Image (cartoon, rainbow, N blue to C red):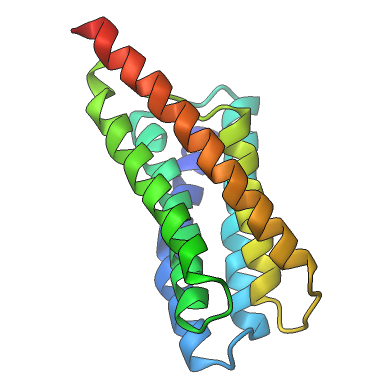
Length: 175
C-alpha cells in the first residue's frame, strides 16, 4: 500500500487544480478556502517526496507526473493572480515560459532517462509555492510575498538555464 502513496498524492494535486480555480473565482479572492486547497497541494508535494525518498519508491508515472502536477498547481495560481493584477504579468510569463521550456526539453531527452530535480529546482518550486501561498492568503503580509516572488523568479531563471545546459549536453553526447 505504501508504494502507491506518492502516486496518489500526485493525483490529488492534479485533482486540486480545478478546485483551486473554482474556489478562487467563486469565493472572495484570497478566500481561506482557496488558500487551504493550495496549501494542501503544496503539502501533498512535500509528503509525496518524503514518502518516496524514505521508502525508495520510484515509478515511471511518478517521475513524469509529479513535476507536471507541481507545474500545473504553480502555473494555475500564477495565472489566476496575474489576471487579477496581484502579481506582475511579466513574472508569470517568465516563470511559465521556463517551466514549459524545461518540461519540453526533459521530454526531448527522455530516451536517455528522466532528468531528476536537483536542489536548486526543488528550492525554486518551494519558493514559488510559498510566495504564491502568501499571495492567496486572505490577509496581507506585504512585502513578504513580493520579495519571495522576485527571489523565486531569479531562481527560476538560473535553474532554467542550468537545466537547459545539462539537457543540451545530454542530447549532444547521445548524438
